[in-house]
Length: 434
Image (cartoon, rainbow, N blue to C red; front, side, top):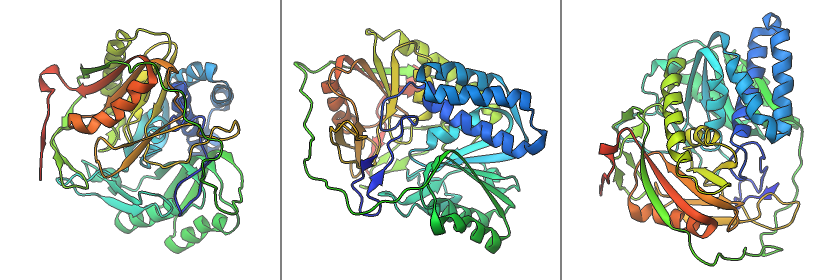
């Protein structure tokens, strides 16, 4: 655990399988989502599920989560099973932490699945089809931009995916908003951790009775917690790690991924617009299983290009904020010695005690919005030979510099700023002041 710098909720479970606050084998967070998908497959198939197929896969998934060296084989076995759900379902991953978790849960299915993740991005040209608040968060508003509104307008079950359920209020707020616009009979709340206890255990059943719906819960780990008092955010045992002798050079590379773009802009808290297009099939705007092949090809192409840039035995691939899943998938295909994690906007107090979850913290203004502070956790200078940071679309050079400057102090050899682009003719700044 770690102390969250947030008066609404003072604690954070620092996950070893999520790929957010701790660098991990990239197959570990992919397997976390896939394992949740396997639980869903068993739940929706009820007695019709093939036990001879499911039991070995489940055992292999659990072994892979407990032993990171076995995560790749377990994940690939799940992906190769080509599971098809008995009925269409829609997965919704919660920003920012569960965008990749929801995507990897959805991605193991070969049919009858669609996916979209919520976002905190302000995209003026698009209208959010649902919106709700995450009451305990430092960033409460969630938006959801479905390119095809019919993605949410059917009667299929909605699978809400979050990394951790503590009270269940976020899921309840989401279900209320969806049901007021696109009513249906069934919802599933899936998470890595479910810590609901006491009166919180009754909130789903109360909502079921109120709305005439069914809510199922799935998780990899369930328990209860009790938090008393407030955290001591003094200096404690925290000491800054030793600085490197010299900064690593920064190499900016535009990498062609061949993926389709959506030509809409974003607006940040200062009113500045970024005209650089978004990845159409990142998950932010909606996906169906027929889109997965294009994403797979793009991932493999980028991974091959980045593998050729590696110089050392140990590399770190970083996503930024909500942009987690594609960098995670790319890292998984870059060979041995590659770890993955993402920057985050969650403020956490660092301390170097052995039993504490966050040993180092590097704050910096968000490249997408200078009014938002982001953080890199648990990376010490010289821990990695090469660091690759992937951004979904171009941002002004001055805005990315605080992030790259930190990474230059952390990398042993080189920092690679990777700007993804559909083709190499489309690289270049595209910004204007509103």
